[in-house]
Image (cartoon, rainbow, N blue to C red; front, side):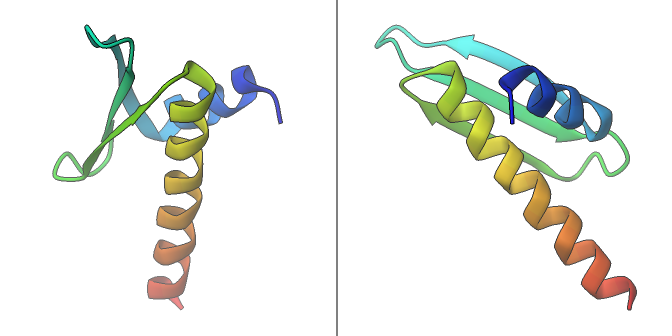
Length: 70
């Protein structure tokens, strides 16, 4: 899946903030739009790495929510 598609899916559920640290590490902070108490921070050497981490996190959160609803 392309990074733009992952980002599009993330932005449907989360508010995202990207930051580039002094050490050259990318940082992605996400906050759930529907539950403001849920947030996460991901760090990595590249944009693609942090985006993939956040996307996997989102899929786990969705799956966990589906299990709780059953």
